[in-house]
Amino acid sequence: MSGRILVVDDEPNLRELLRIVLEGEGHVVRTAASYAEGSQLLTHEQFDLVICDIFLPDGNGLDLVRTFRPTMERTQFVVVTAHTTPAHALTALREGAVEYLSKPFDVEELKLIVTKQLSRPVGGPSIPDFYKFIGQARTMWSILERVPQVARSEATVLVTGESGTGKELLARAIHAASPRSARLFVPINCGALPEGLLESEVFGHVRGSFTGAIRDKRGLMQEAHGGTMFLDEIGELSPNTQVKLLRALQEKRIRAVGDNREVAVDVRIIAATNQDLLRLVKEGRFREDFYYRINVIHLHVPPLRDRSEDIPQLARHFVARACTRLGVPAKQVHRDAMAVLESYSWPGNVRELENVVERTVAMEPSPLITVSSLPPVILGSEARGQAGDRETTLPEDGLDLEAHLEAIRRELMIAALNRCGGVQKKAAQMLRLSYRAFRYHANKYKLAPED
Image (tube, rainbow, N blue to C red):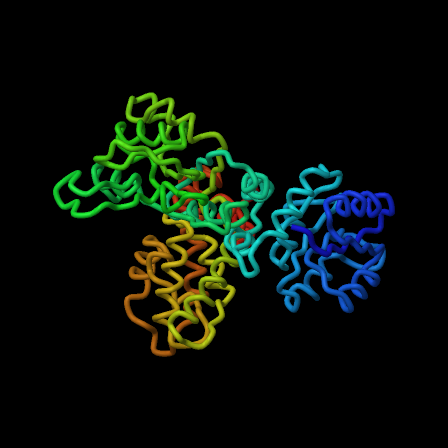
């Protein structure tokens, strides 16, 4: 599919190279050497795709995206730069770019990206929503850097991580950024259905194949033809179902339950689990050949306690969404309440944070979420016990609750440090805090030097 393309870059040789390459692909190409020239062309001409550098002699290429993307729904923006970091890439994608490339880049790769973006349906899914979820923590950089490449690949992906970390959102992001994005993303929870019913759901069945099969039924793998199937909790699959899925992946053909005919399927598989599949293999509970077939590309989503710097962004996002869903006025999170959220260990990860925020929004009548708005479990069982011991009744003149809770936190941290011989990591574990959160408060309260 040909289109009108604008290249904005201050390197003359690169502009000329891209012009020659893209015109050779049948596109109409205009070039600009600066922010001002690019802005002028975008103001007066229509383009299907803009390829722009971030660092321009008179401005920032991301400002082109910020300025023109909201009013140019049919125009896609691809950002290229010689100084790419995950933070740059994240910013570009959030501002509305559909892709980013690091210089020097493979011209063939660029051609594939151009073809993909020009063939993408207007209003079709794209990757920026995923980056709103994933945050900017350094522990996520390895995923941030790999998502575009993984999306372009057809390889099977295994996503691991604790429950509630966002494995399905990551899978949806990969699908949305892939050439399969115009087709269906079909999720199925392998642990929610008994073996017989699961096989029927995945492969389909023919009438009369078992009791209750009153008509033919297409399986979800057929429904996902041309798209992506997400197999959640894949560690729960029975050995028999593993064999059938392995055969389907290898031969790209499936047979419905009770049928003797095979049909071809073209489906990309993304699997997810919170279990240690390699341990299950060693224990004989998971087939080794199936494990290596699904574990072609491995992405691990770290728990929220290991990326606590993302909590403020996620919390604000969930607050805004909850306010919209519940039909209540917008609310803000007080900084002390945010500090409590950052200090909590979140065993339920992002899902738990979302649920806590929605419950808090629903129960807090004022426009400000404070420490007292949060559910007791977030404040810590130890803190509740201490508070009950020292203040069974409210003083007549009231009290500063947030300062009171801060004092309780400080005393508990001192007690934990004393019990752990001053070792902050052990004290953090005792209080169910991330090490980063404990260090933050230890420095704040001037309790102890860093380990």
